[in-house]
Length: 109
Image 1 (cartoon, rainbow, N blue to C red):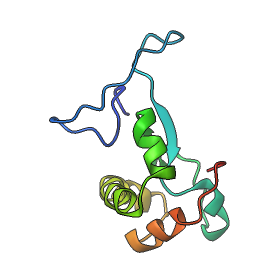
Image 2: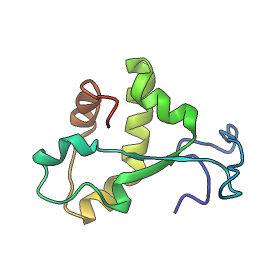
Image 3: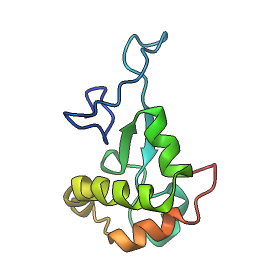
Image 4: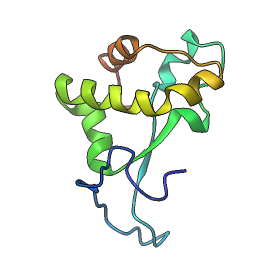
């Protein structure tokens, strides 16, 4: 689904990553858009393709450790891309609820 591209990359900013010695493809990390630690608030599993985004290592760390302004802008963007697919799976979350969830992230998310 990602074609080995960061979900936050644009045509202007490709978010180039290094080539993985193991796979021979650009290195990406998988990230649950709606944090898996929030599963108890959802009827349907969050561990589905529609809730998993491929990110370059820098963007992945930014979602965990960046400033609130950086995270909110990018979370809203990712949700806008994935919202219809998530809803088709019965998973509904507002942008404000999602950004609130990120305020309580741990290193395990």
